[in-house]
Image (cartoon, rainbow, N blue to C red; front, side):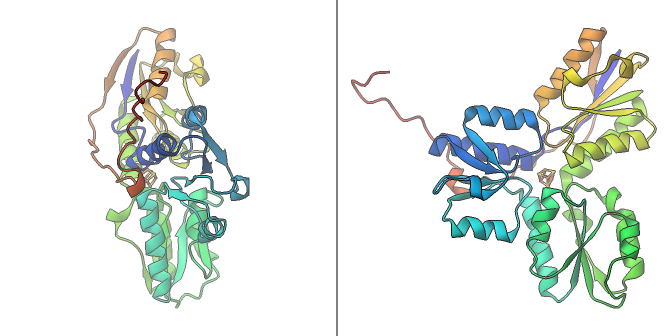
Length: 320
Ligand code: SF4
């Protein structure tokens, strides 16, 4: 059996930064540090940070007074930020800079007097965060049908922004429907979309051309991982979303000559290796990687965490 890995796959710069923020905060301030919502949507990542002393909460009411509080990569609503300020919680913001950019764009459009439409999935924490950045009404469009029923006059000044884990391809038809309905509408440049989402989707399309079956490594609640699975399936290749090697079903791959593997932006490479090991237990395999885009994007850490803490030197005569 030939196993082909998509390139790029797995961690994006926003996820790397968010995890590093929690690790450096633990190093600098000592455990526990409190993280609002899963820092990224991956149980393996969350469990390993929990083991180091991170405590994950859904509500700030669960955070004790003065405890270090980290906002997840998905971003938060203004009200959450204000709640933290009101409680004088020391906050470190791990919101991905690309999500922050969407927040700023949305605020700018509303400041210009435009009615805002957000293209995204209801209930996703990023969507809740972006909607919660706007003081006036924001309308959510999850698909083209939603555009027809938006309660906005067709001659209104409108603007749209999109959830970062949707690619240009995902939003194209919804944007076309918006432009058909509203004549005065503006939106961000396509270059503003998340590079990682687009690159991983392009890579899974390439993978679907050569693979008989595709395994997407990622969490069930990871929006971008689900989308990778859908794209593989839409291209006609049976595609399965699995958290790790333990979820691999032998019948999925028993007739496959080529098994393709990719991973969502919040899935660590160790889980891809785990799936490869599970395949190896079933069959003798040969592993290769598809050529693809090399990513070299890095996001800066918040200023207070830029210098890694050096271990405190032991004092002379102290017990070691
Ligand atoms: S997928 Fe894109 S927007 Fe989301 S955390 Fe990664 S880089 Fe940021």
